[in-house]
Length: 162
Image 1 (cartoon, rainbow, N blue to C red):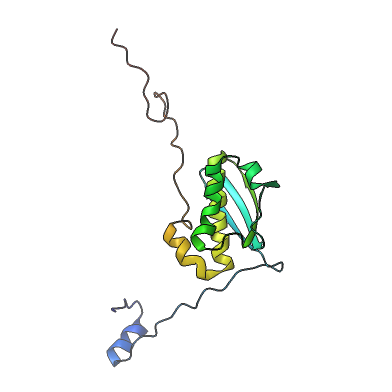
Image 2: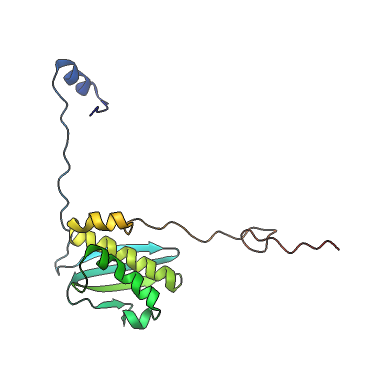
């Protein structure tokens, strides 16, 4: 209710009794290219993915291979399907992704992040569900660096009394 006033004009308007003009955010617009696709970049650990989505039959291609060939483990395939399940749009979009860096787990997380961002750009009404599930937030956890005088990041060398 109480707005912070940062200019003299705003202060004068309050003193005269007029309320300062409050800007209302316009609803988000869909962002699509000339081919009807939405693009987003996803990141997780050291992996970076570029993701394009377009309406289709639910076909997912990662680095030119089918999803079940590239991500052979069912857990990683489930991670990729999560944004569609939460948004309620299973088998409605085709995904074409390229991913570099990191391992398979980080790459799956990066593609999931990219799919989520691309979905909310394609259809802004899906943003609420994806944001509530935490899929639009970049997971900033990365591996801690090894310290000198230690065996790993925190693990010390074995102590020997004699």
